[in-house]
Length: 222
Length: 222
Image 1: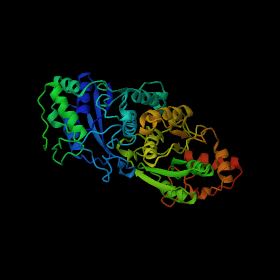
Image 2: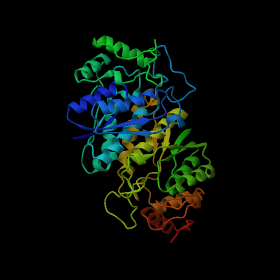
Image 3: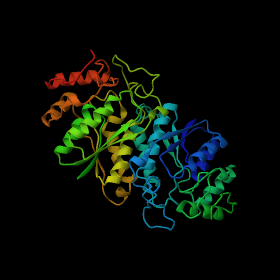
Image 4: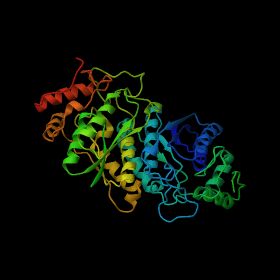
């Protein structure tokens, strides 16, 4: 069965790719170059797609700097290095809606009936579009939005790690043979993939390896 | 009140812009350069935004040729010049889902509580994402997908011409002073905006002016 998978180059989507492959899916991976500061993520997505056996991998350019409004795409907003309350400035407006819409279009073209996405509601730092009710609403939309949906074929949106802790995700991926040394999570990684060790994403990742009892292969600057 | 409006450069979205302005909205227009063959549409969108008083106008590059699958974005698929049954090859996979997702992100950034879109279910030629139930599903998604939605502010999706015939749209726009000579509908318009006169879109447009009893300002090749 064919599936489209949103691949960021981070730890979560790499784990989801390993899960989809373990379930026997022919996975067509899609990454989005949305002008993110952490360009090393896109390089990581290429390594992960190859290592975990994606059938294809495309990188779609979508420059969200035209829209602005996030520390991840707007150079005028700094990435915070201390925990914040509420929805953080690293939230990218409508990002997962956009990502899923691109995946939906690609699913129609390649004839896939599933979309995999590595969103997580536990460590989601308050992002509204990482919650189960958002995923369910998109699945309903997908049915109405597409040629195949209108013709009666369901398009399912799979978010298999949405209720897992970072430690559980790392344990699951490790059991499936994921090499997390290939992945990059840091919001401000250097061009050669060194992690800052201080942003929200680095903190969650480091704690996750500790919780999982798995050695952390990440190369941190500090 | 602020609104984001999806502006294609065609007849329908120009009419919707005139309607939103007549309702007193501060309109932030958004066009998407998705690699459409009919580049003259984007030039038209600039003229229409200026003529009808949009507060801002942005063109976001989103090259859907990476996805393919439509005569409008894939050079390998010809634009049909005779009527077809079912969903036509000019359907762009997930196009309106993508457009609305971009509009949603922009609405969050500019602080708009409404999104206007010129979809039409009467002359929609079988596109699934031009139906009222699709628009309603996206409105539900928008509430769950966004920071403002989570914080309790509704984001409304307005599709004021969705149930109107092309003739009714042209009558309404003419009453509001829209100069349809600025707009381009043809799927394969020439660079300087000449319409082929033969594609689905030209046929609907020509018939619409006839039905409305309004002189057709379109420059047709034949």
